[in-house]
Length: 285
Image (cartoon, rainbow, N blue to C red; front, side, top):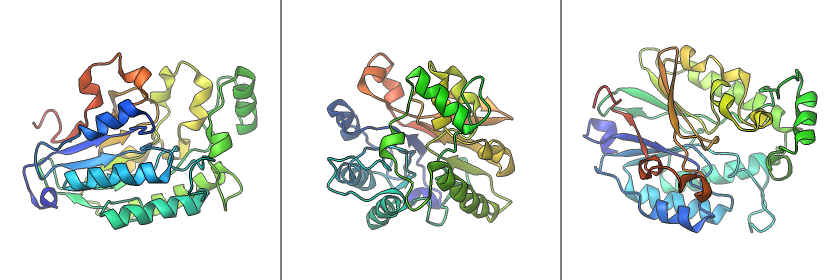
């Protein structure tokens, strides 16, 4: 880990590689670090089939000094065509075991510290899911919000493919993950700032530009709304929305780093498909 020992590398981030698409696989094949000390944060949605996820992460682990991964909703799907039919927590644990064999940091591992330029900073990969608390407009409960989404015909595929076993619901799994993750973050060195890496946005604000506002309920939880302040974040990295951009809140930089589907990125500048530089921060470079 050259970057962890004060090398000249950069801390980079990308998400939503969606390698089921041939054009997206070509993007992954073209990813190369500029320095042997570069780290890469992968904020979920690498793919849906376990073999594709493992193949992609193995390639990235060979090229980058350190890879940090947190799951998106697509990794947690159990597609019928995937030979690996594990569901819920067992599927997540299976992916964590694959990452550990590859030397990739997961939300279940000790949080590494970046000592390169802009550091020292704790890199915290998070897995907290969503709990439907980003209610659809005009609703105030999960039940009302889901009903509104079904009426509008805006229903996330998670409802059919992301199984929460052994938890009774996805929001119950989210509550458990919130408790686990909050406790771990509270144990971090209070003298160090953090980079928080999660597939879903930690606050609702980024979802306000969604074309279908009903979809926001599958995009996070109000339980993380103040984590960027409480846990000393210098940057929050996320994906999921397929709306790559930089935002600021409470003096904290929020980076949406998704590639997205070919129909989305083909009309965007090529720079959007490259990993985003997280550290050194633009004003430090």
